[in-house]
Image (cartoon, rainbow, N blue to C red; front, side):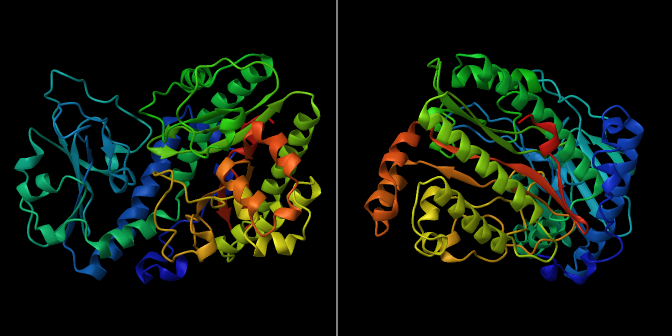
Length: 466
């Protein structure tokens, strides 16, 4: 929320989002290293200015950010998960090649201390050129643990043991005041960050469009569709920004369905794909739902699907500067209540549906979240949502420079439908229609939205086929 930002962060040093970079010039960015270097250089200048204000206010002489760690899968094992990059490190640069420290000092060029590759088990990560290495002083070393830091320095990262080896004081590791300020800074995206998210969206869209084509053509399985998505987007399960949700039929009602079935499904059914991609460490997050079949219930489900899609587009247009995101979330329940009424699922008034909590049985999750380096990015839930919105991940005031998702849905989740059919409003719920539509599972439509002073810019809608 902008009002909560320290005064040093709200300044002309934070550049406004350049709309021309979204769409018109982005195709050239995929092939022009010079454009990427320029965008990233300006991004680093922005961070230097903002971090200078943070460090001066908190009385910190220097900040050391570790690139990240690989965690053990089990304490009595020798197998590790892939590297979990420290988001605040990635915020400065997409350096993933070897372990590294980023050192930030007031009035100095940021320094990358990179550990020389010395393992014969694995090779270094591929070198990325879509950023400005010259914005940093790069200093190689054989062992990061041999670095030593003065007492006035602070540390950000998960490897506290490494931090203490370098002389860092425990109380200077992941300080709440420093982390909160750094999180707030990440809520307002630079032009470089927006470009990264847009390219990540373009990659993900190729996978979505391919899966729709396969689904339309005939028999499919969830595991087969998942593998096709990985192939088309040239990702692995571990390089995805989050585990793909690929669901057929009733599984579309499992909000985080990741246990893919191998059963090949032909004929009438639905498909929900919630899947993204990464570029330079930034994520995209797209969801689409499709259906096939000509039965009476399939036709009703398709009408419901078209209605949710229309509502989603209207909600995107409601992403305006100065509005509370929670207010938009509450408005989404009013709009979805109208859909439930128009489709004959619920017969009571829109006001009764919302006030009684009935809409929250059909739409139990939040309208969306912040998006960036982390799929559920930080800094935009500083206040708790109201009790009825306990799953809402964004309670911020909508501000130019934010990137958020808008993802309304209607689901037929068995446990929640049981509550609807036995609760105080059961007389208004069309039991036959609920049970008839339950084999289709549910609907979710999600796009990634850039907030500007001129309105919402949809970063994904034009990339994914209907």
